[in-house]
Image (cartoon, rainbow, N blue to C red):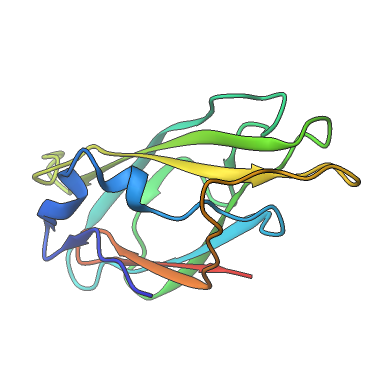
Length: 155
């Protein structure tokens, strides 16, 4: 499944829908990271992951990324990961937030940014079960950022 977030410098309208986050699947407990692939093409864009936060660190530790939190979106496709480490202490579903600002080379934010997403991650401690309202399974989500495409692949 592919989901585009930003195309040709514009945040797509459905991302601004207040109901979007409740429609997205819960990231299963087996998934400990999400891979992104992005590129800017010929234009220069700068990014800032200004928010990486867990709403319940007794279930899900603070997410981290495998690139610097600020920098330039690469011209050619490049992969990075968002790490989603469960605490190992409690089973449950925790919400986490990602905040991403993308700016032009002149420092002008793209329309619709900053992009703020609140997603849900399931964590399970061995021997315990997690009750979910709905059972979601997914393999690939793609978000586009800027002209950059962010492809999220879950394993």
